Length: 585
Ligand code: ARG
Image 1 (cartoon, rainbow, N blue to C red):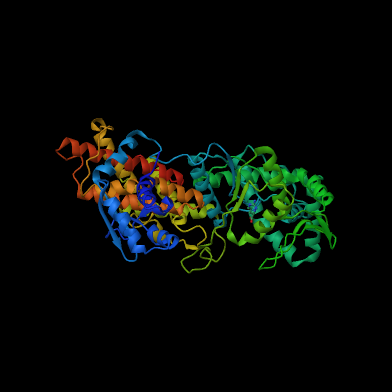
Image 2: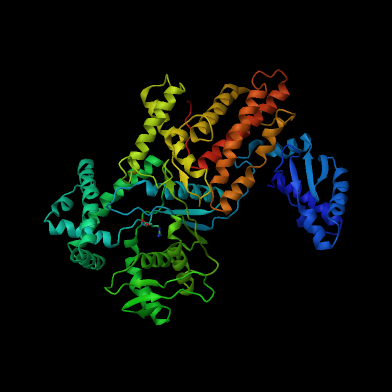
């Protein structure tokens, strides 16, 4: 299916071609001055430069040939050679006609089932999940949904941190204090027992880590424990297995509350058996080398502007590093899944790590050039003081607590706005949860991925403004309108567009480009922007038009068809953002 912008670009491109100019110059965009025109084409300037002609003359010839076509109701030149365009309502209505039944709302398939692996979890076992894990989960899950919709076979991998020195510290602490029973006697099928171990680890780990950092002997011991664990020696390995199983229960609880899904529950430890053969192979090929007792892959290149340290595969004590497991994970991913893309949605402060990893993986030919490797980094979530988000006491806030306080806030906002007031408690709880998650996710996703943003609970929970709750409210409003009209909607109605319908009809045609921009840039904020404009444009349409009360049946049908399209796009776009819409509010 061809989008409106593509169709217009074709028409304008033909006008360029008729002047002997490259049709690519005819690319049409939505106007950045909607007060002057609906669309614009900026190609005349470059076309003139290429043909060594005067830009206004080139634009003039294009305008003349376009004016003769009845698609356009206005064609004019602005400034040095911008071409401003308005299209006829009939053309716009005809464009939307086939969309009447299209569940994809005109969005083409951008892929044919190629596999894409998305890495957006990264919680470390034995530690309580905290707000630092929020952005990866929210953005990553949205990217997964967008890519699935675009036609990829997606695999979201939680890739937990379960194989590092922190494990040696924690296990060592249980052993040194003779308290391994706390771990071994845990009953994984008993929620209370699982919770008890989780709480124990949450307190014990930071203490043990603090002690190890202060005492070189303890640190040494922790590192030795880690090597033993990585050799799968007992009792280290059994203790670790229980710690990991219990941690996964806690992670799933957090991710479920957020509505974030993973297809693969793998961790760094799962690739351990790939490491030794991989390192041997790389040594044999001369790609890995010994340096100061460690085994490293040099990744610096002659024109590097910044220092590029080698990637360490084995430390001097034989322990493996973060990069080693990531590299071995690439070996496994290529072998098991043959992906065409691997995308890491990870804090952008890990940029250097991924640069090293990607260079090493290319050099070692673990990942061939045709397979895309991307670090889709994100910025920091700050508090209202502009510093990284903390609890009032200055500590790191647990993810569960953040979700809880947001749900509480959602309840208060709902009461203020008389939302879901007369529902029974179960349904009101469900709405409060959905409002809270919408608030958290939309506040995060609306920012450009790389930008830092401020988590301002007061603002993001409001039913007015650019918020998740506002979007839910509008989405529910459209749904309820359509429910009231249900029996009388004619999905084959042709659109009859006029002044009050036009802005909505024009915006609805921009949907494919919004999805494409989000897909190409791993950037859900394009969809947030679109959703917000859709909600606002719908809201003024609703205010300016008679819909159910319209007496002209053809116009009524046309308006209901626009409402149905809006509803479908809202459904799609919110589901791509991972936001659930309540049935009613
Ligand atoms: N566990 C890591 C951390 O806490 C994040 C893992 C991200 N994914 C990856 N494949 N490196 O920083």
